[in-house]
Length: 345
Ligand code: PEP
Ligand code: MN
Image (cartoon, rainbow, N blue to C red; front, side, top):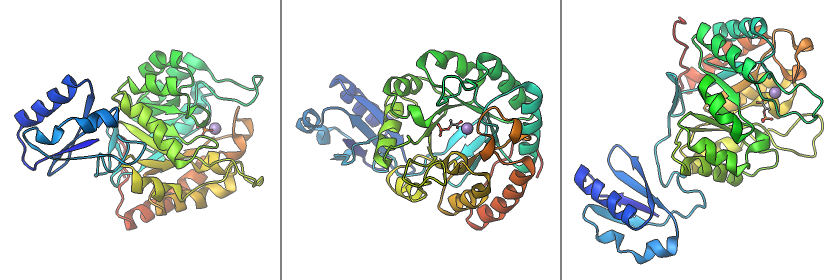
C-alpha cells in the first residue's frame, strides 16, 4: 500500500502518519519526492485495507501497489535512485564504470591493473576475494588477504572498491574492507544472504541470477530494501540459454524493462554475459545506449596468467580504447561519468 500525502504536508503530519502505521504493527518506508511525500506500508494488504488510513490528517490518498515488488517499484518511488559510493554517483544519469580483474591475485598485479583502469576512466575497482567457482578444485580466492590488498589498492588510486560476498558469515569481514558489496548471480536467491546484507548500510550490487526473470531480480532487490538498505544497484549479466557460442545470453532488453518498473539503477556486465573478449566492447556500448547506468568489465594485464576468467578479460589498452568510445556516447546521451578523487580529465 502507498500513502500519498498532500503537497506541503507538515513534518508533524508526516510524523503522525508514521506513528499510526507503526502503532498498527507495520513498518513505514518514506519516499521524499520534490513535491510530495509517499509512505510505503508493506504487510498484509487485507488488514491494511480495513484501516481508515485515508482519514488521517494530511493524507491525500491510499493506493495499493499492484506489483509483487513494492519498495523497488516506480509506484513507490518515482524518481531514479542515485546511489553514491564514496562520492561516485550511480543512477539518475550518472554512470558507474566498474573495472578490474575477476579475482584478486596479489598486490603488485592488482596495483598495476588499477592504475591502468583508473587512468582510462574507471571509477570503481572490482576484484573477487571469495570466488564462486564451478569446481571446488579451482582457485577459490585469497579471502581476507585479498580484501586487504583490494582496500589498499583502492585507497592508493582513490577508487571505491566492490567485492563479492557469498556467505552471511563473511559480511562483517567484507564490509570492513569494501565500499560496495556484490551479490553474485549464483546467490541472487539466497534469501538469508539478501536479508543480512539488507541490514548493512553498504551499497549493494545485485547481479541477475543465471536463470532468473526480471521479476525474480526485482523480488530479490526487494529483500534487501525491505531490511532498510536502500542502496541497491541491479546488474544484468546474461542468462542461460541454448546458445553455446557465448557464455550466457545478454538480455539487453532487461535494462529498459527494469528501469520502466523500478527506480533502482541498473548496470550491465558484458564480461560474464558473453565470456568473450571480442564481444565486450560492442555490448558495453550497446548497454550504455540502452540506458544502463554503467558497465562492469573484467580487465587483466596478463589474461593468460589470470587465475579465473582470463578468456573474457580485456587488456588495459583495450579497456582504455573502449572508454574513449563510451565517453562521447555518454555525453551524447546526456550522461555523466564521475571521476575518482585526484584524477583530472
Ligand atoms: C563476478 O563478477 O566475478 C562473477 C562471478 O559474476 P557472476 O556472479 O555474474 O557470475
Ligand atoms: Mn569473473
